[in-house]
Length: 276
Ligand code: KIV
Ligand code: NA
Image (cartoon, rainbow, N blue to C red; front, side, top):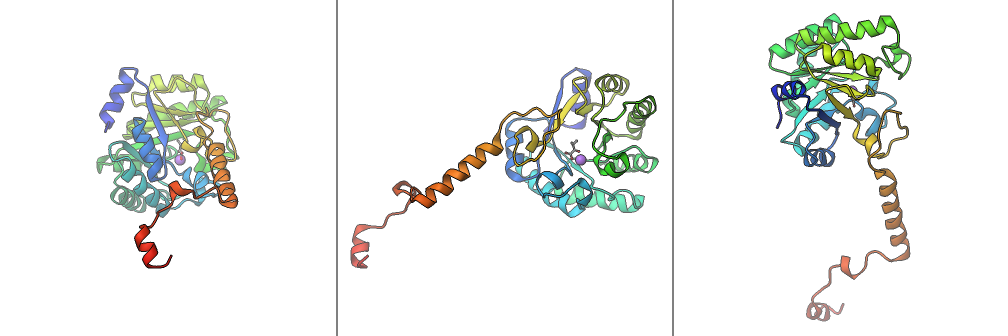
């Protein structure tokens, strides 16, 4: 398993960091077999595996339930779990308690929080002191979708671009060991990545990040309704799975399945004895 020191070294050496989300045991196993550097149990699970409308409905219990499955599936991969909506905003004490719950119950290696407010920076400092590595997340922060007014690129004007640079600096100085940049223009990504010494992990942020993260179900087109423009599709798993299930359905209807190969036979003598 790689660790936070190695991630820093990878940045120094110009070696890109690969991260993918996973939300359950089989996905975690496959991501580990693919030798990705890090797995994120993102609160995107609310949309891609639970069918919620946004990440706002995701609870601590959801994160723990899925986090546990992922750590069981990828015991040798560095795993980051998102702290969900409002689980770190009520008070520092409540935030620390929630962080403790997630860390102790999931067995993950690190947590991720969105934004760079003073309270969040204080939390990052406290968590790091307590031995919990923290990933920051700025740019498009989906938990604030209702404040941002939608899912759209951030840092497009002078004010917000400058703010993102400042936020990245603040995250670094508060102890975050890495920062996700979501939906940020490439030139700004490049500047921030040069400017801070912690690795930047991009999603919709161009090639100049120190690493990349994508949502598992997006790259596989597995049960998703919508494909963001920054997603590269590596396999049409959803349509493959649908075709396979359709075939099964038809085989059951036609009697094609099960055939002899998929059936247990009985000892001839026993069958005779029983008059079967
Ligand atoms: O929840 C998530 O999947 C994320 C990534 C998109 C960074 O936060
Ligand atoms: Na997230």
